[in-house]
Length: 115
Ligand code: 5GP
Ligand code: ZN
Image (tube, rainbow, N blue to C red):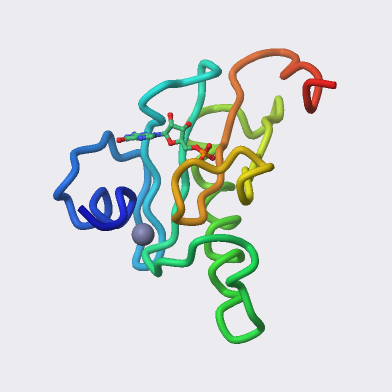
């Protein structure tokens, strides 16, 4: 039990690793919505953006710097890609461990949101 993404970090739940460093882990989304769909998580458990403070703000910089590496690894850095955070219930968040979706591999990622 506990947090699914913490269990992915500690290996209890299997995942397909895309990138890892001391602070960040990234893996293939189990239900990809684009040719490239990678989830990027910090090894520190915080649930949402609301849990970020000046003291732990390196969580986001660690994640975004990893996104840059992942985009290069996946070959979408030059063409471009979309970075999404579903934050909170209305934002569509399902897993309560802050995460970034890196999505790409298409020439046009389409409208930003469904109107
Ligand atoms: P959210 O809506 O919380 O931003 O997105 C959660 C994402 O986690 C979804 O895109 C979903 O497909 C993905 N996901 C849920 N469970 C698992 C899992 O066990 N393994 C992997 N790799 N992805 C998962
Ligand atoms: Zn967690």
